[in-house]
Length: 265
Image (cartoon, rainbow, N blue to C red; front, side, top):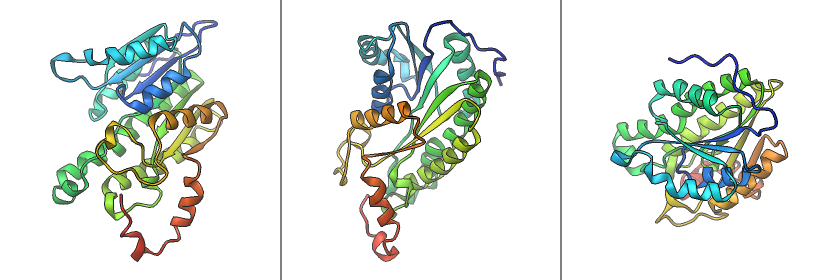
């Protein structure tokens, strides 16, 4: 396992890099595009290679980020489920493209609830990606950015984890665990110079939910990204998207369980 660098390369007058873990994520890319504010800024897209194309399918994403002002867009092979590779990947990013300003953890799977109820293996796959892999990468990120002395981490939870519903309890339980872990990590980082922003979106209309009926108060990746960037700039700890979901779920927590279990996804 690679060791963290004792000193991370600093360049006077140059803004730090933006790292998207889950480089194909619509929300992650939209956040990165909004954060680019200097022509010399580097964006690192860390994504799982796909077949023989490897990372060649990120051409469109790179063009979009360069059009937004990024001077350099770097593609890095990153498999969130391969926990043993996290340290080396993050170390190499820090050494070659540091200092790191913002890391957006944008990987995840929705999974198939019906399949997960029949096959424990699929339930474990969902929880491994959406919870276990996040714990591994966030712990390593926290150590890396502590050593750097500054940086921001964006973690995407979900209202599905605020009160887990019967209709998607496998995914919801993973998000509930992630939400709790990220909240505790944010407190652990207090005073270190590193900040963590926890984002709790509702239903997001995008590639992951294609073909599904949107839930009430649905948002788009662009809306989630805009709220996320505003939260970063205002040094918020938690952002709900849309904001109306915060009081809505305060009330939904009080709903009797016999009614709650009938709630749709």
